[in-house]
Image (cartoon, rainbow, N blue to C red; front, side, top):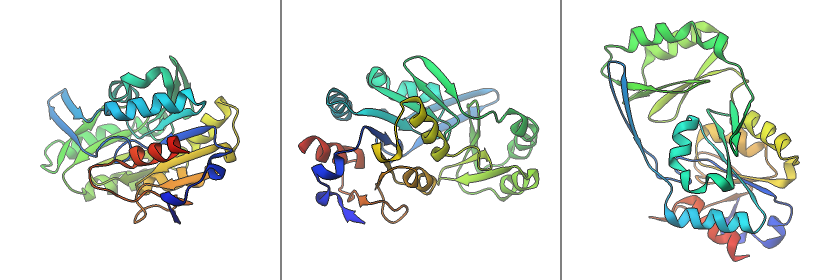
Length: 250
């Protein structure tokens, strides 16, 4: 991998769409969740005004902007309301893409998840490590203080499902069918793009497939994922901020 300062105008020449992961890339990590009975309260970070202006400028220069996340659509719309006219949102680990009010569904996971949800609710109800279930359409996300072995065991018994731990929550997904890479392939079809036209930026283990699916993968954390280039971690600067600064300077 090369450091971002080696990225050149030639490297950018074929890129038509830039795909950003969210947590740790466009916004700081961290979600506060509180569940009391049937009421769930979520608090998360929103995109900074500086990044809003950077994305608007990239859009003016002709780049398509896609945001790829495991988060649900309603939350992404709240987090990125300031740039919704300029972006598409691929959400819940590649399950669907929203663009200018239209939803393109890529996966139907209902048959796989309908039976496991009551089991998960039952075993997590009194577990002090479980903070709550994040409302989503196509995947199940359980926020936990630490890993919970019982969750992993129940999912493993189902056969068609997997658990992905991101450090603060479990995503429960359909094997092979719910990946950010699949979401990117569908997004490329929507916008009629080839692999060589796409740059992806991610920082966590579940972003590795996303990065491999693009022609220009950028690692926002070289200790976790690999790309052609990596963004150095610099204090208060988010990886997306540094990358956009570099692109706009070329």
